[in-house]
Image (cartoon, rainbow, N blue to C red; front, side, top):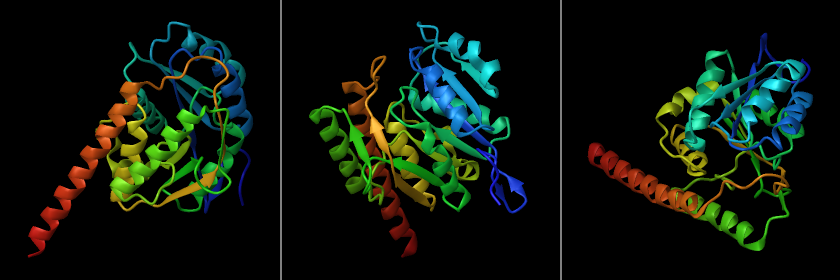
Amino acid sequence: MAGDGSRRVIGCRAVRVAVVVPTYNEAENIVVLCERVRAALPDAEIVVVDDASPDGTADVVRSIAERIGRTVVLDRPSKAGLGAAYRAGFELAIERGADVCVQIDADLSHDPAVLPALIANIEHGADLAIGSRYVPGGITLDWPWRRRSLSRWGNRYVAGMLGLAVNDATAGLRAYAVDALHRMDYPTVGAEGYGFQVEMTHRLVRAGGRIVEFPITFRERTAGESKLSNGIVREAMVLVVRLWAEDRRGRRQRRRQGR
């Protein structure tokens, strides 16, 4: 029988959930996000990983931590990339006993109300559950045509180049089973920016992990500034070529060993 919020019972074991939120200058959004996460998952731990935000995001989180409960801030000395923030957040969450690590953006583009459904997929055997914009029922609201096209075709490029049966490999709303993170050796994932999501997806597929996508509504941020840049896009494109080359070398090596 399932319990309330984030503590659901599989057999006789309650699942401990950590929601990892990387932040840089998200003071305008972070309170609302944390409150909505707490409403959706009353027992989850919220781990905010802040890259020394000049707008005081970390202090804002600390000011509400006692009120909303089970919220910690991991302060980093400088802005060092999305991938590094998630790796650090996962490490802290796992040290504190998490069974499931959730990723969610701080800009309110993802609705925390869907988090229980995300986690339910892990409880039913998925290694990774993705809140997807590009499966039937998925919606993207308020994005300009160029941004929508870049995202959609970028995901098709990723899937085609790497042979991934995943529609939204760049999605930022995710839940990972911790044992799957260990199998992937997540601390050695090198990508930063949005390429981190691609490399994590690729690595889990190659490790034989089970991935489930379910539709979400994605909304453009209304406060603060997007962190997407041309450099981040270029990094992701180069990463895909590198991963493709690694896969090709691996196939050649396996063929040689099989002779």
